[in-house]
Length: 108
Image 1 (cartoon, rainbow, N blue to C red):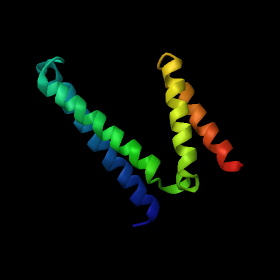
Image 2: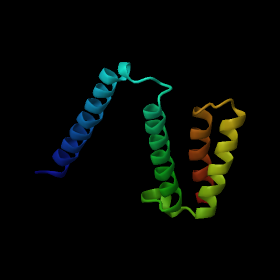
Image 3: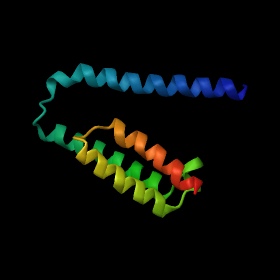
Image 4: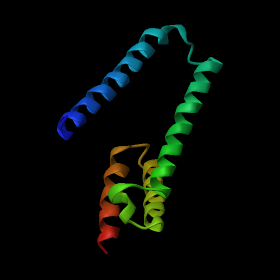
C-alpha cells in the first residue's frame, strides 16, 4: 500500500471514529442532565485530558515546535492566555497571535 493510501485510510478511520462517538453522544445526551454528577465527571475528564495534551505540547513538543526554546513557548502561552482573558474570551485573536509570536521569536 502506498503511503498516500495509508494516510487517506488513517483520515477516514479517525473521522469515522470521531463521528460515530459524536453521533452516539447526541443520541444519548437527552437522557443525561447537565447538572448531574456523571456529566460533571465527564466534563472534568475532558478538560483534564485537554490540559495534559497542551502541557505535553508545550513541555515536550514534536515537529517544528520543538525548534523553539521552552522559555519562548511558555512566554507566548502566558501572553496568549492574558490576551484571551482581556479580549472577552475571543479564541481567534490569541490563536493568530501565538502563531505570529512563535514565528517572530524563532526568527530572531
